[in-house]
Length: 243
Image (cartoon, rainbow, N blue to C red):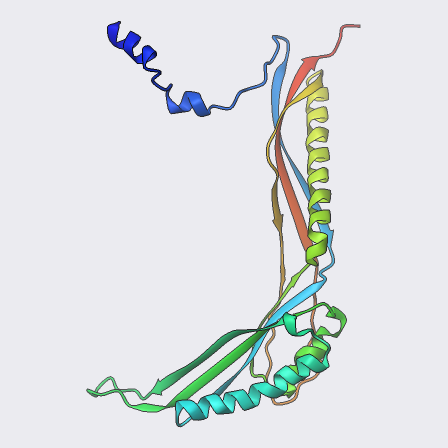
């Protein structure tokens, strides 16, 4: 008892679980708690395409490989500028120069056969109608590597789509609660708890395979973007009033 009194006198903290446990809403004797998850999905047309395009060259020396790479990349950049893509939407995303070794598994010294240089730029375009023509033009200009495309909605529209998906999730949760209450001969009395929303946005992805020096228009199918929001809610159900 003396130890307990000393602990209280010194203000010893309560256990962590007791400190951090979230306060629960009070439920009356005639109420029943119902937990549901509401999911809302909004489909949107892609508005932005991102691709990474580059060139790969070789040379007897590192300088020769890099010089050839620079010369080959220049017309690729020119095509992007002629297409009206702003400079801030063209970003260097990779540059490397590496030695290429002979197969020397049975030798004591590695032998360098030459050098390989690669460079790439990441490009963002909102002109999806001309995306296929742009990609074809880039390869005609000398590009020989590409990854993407990746599609997304414009940044200024993300919040609007998110709010729409969240509202749909809440409506769906309430519809679930009303249907369950009706099936039980009860009604929704009130909302007890609403969790933070969890929002996910899908990104359209594609793959491009190119062979040959000149190609026909590259087919691009943007598909659609899906914005999904989830809420966990708790409702208090109560019996229907007696007639």
